[in-house]
Amino acid sequence: MNFPSILQKRPFLLLLIPATLAFLIALIPTIKFQWPLSWDIYYHVHLTKLYIEQGFTIWDPLTYAPFGRPIVYPPLFHYSLAVLTTIFKMDTFQISRYLQPIFSFSLVISFTYVAKKLYNLRIGLIAGFFLFFTAVFHRAMLPIPESLALIFFPLAIYFYYTSLEGNGLKYAIISGIIGSLMFLTHTLTALMMLGVVLLFTFCLKLRKDKVEYNSLYVFLVVSLILASLWWLNLIVQHGYVFNNPQAALQGPVGYFTILIKTWGVPAMISAFLWLVIMVRNGVAEKSIGKSIKECSRNNFLIITWLLFILIISSAYLISIPILIERIFNFAVFPVIIMAALGLEYLRGMNSKKSIYGKIYGVLVVLLIIGAATHGFLYASSVKPLVNDSQRDIAQWFAENGDKKGVVMSLTEGIDPVIVSFSRQPVSTGGYQPGMVRVLDRDLYYSGNYTKEDIVRDNIKYFVEASPIIHKSYLTLVYQNKDYKVWRVDI
Image 1: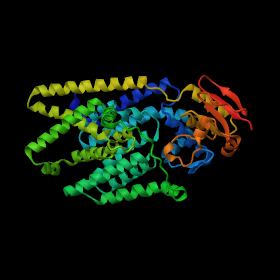
Image 2: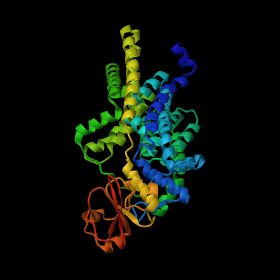
Image 3: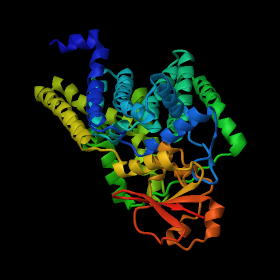
């Protein structure tokens, strides 16, 4: 096979190799299990059904009942699920399950395509295989809004980068449109993208680069105006609420442990090699300031991209609770490119000593074999986070619930499952950051509640996984091997 010839004539076909491998890997749990892998998807299916039932709405009466809450989660993913459910006339859960290999394929092709455009095809392919060792690839199998937004993430930044090169403001418009889709899909991903764009532009300004700075204004106007079509309506009617999720603070050791798990050991080693080489060569030949000034713009992009994420994640080191695993995910793209550049450096040394070319070839083969093996092992070990007992409870409510009274679940994590199947109001219901008011669950956990409390809070059912204090007006109406359902008869 004439590999260089294929590189020139059909480059996109080669980009399909890692993406197709990702598709096949994600097919394993998709075929193996009849339900989607994610726990989060049950909340998203609930919102999808709410949109199907009510059309456009920004109020959710079924979660955090009896109060309800505004829907502060962007709707693009849910409307997409609703459209697919309607077109194919299939169960929303099954549509979500079939998205798993599609999301995996799309994320890998997005990452490799942008890497190729920023550098070359070899970098794109090698970066694609490094991706298999990262947490981002693992999360790509989950049919959730974050997975969809991560597909958009490198595309939005790349088209903005292209617009700065003076290739016309049309690329800034394209980037703005993709950015708006991110704001309408997953807020955190969109904000991280915006932070990278702003820091990169600011650093270019400090370097006094000659670029099309008007692209920034076009990008911001397009992305924010399109996103405001939904966000403005929500904020005007209900304001914006976000309860920061509590995260366990584990200190510097925990920080670096999470970093390794998120970026993958192979990518970190190769990326570190490239950084050391860059710093050594730069300092040896010129001053640090001159090295920064003469750094190629594509390298400057991935360095500032990584720098922004490290700045944000440093809040974790000073005891500010943030979801550090999620933050590190946004640095995977520059890290895998740096890793690919580290291997590429060995290839470039082949002109000096042929041994380096042989080492490069062996490492690439080992990388491909390791990526495929790691991916298949992960896909073979992963399983749905919601079990049959939880779905059985939800199905019971779908068939027997009164659709009015609130379900008080004295166990964590089952409320989104119940509401997604049954449309029965629940006392919590997923996506805790969007909570406004919540019942006093400690009161019901303790058993020190009264009939007046039950009536006030409109409690109709209790779900327990461990024994509770059974009032005389509670009737056991269903049980399986893990749960019991008690009905309130007042």
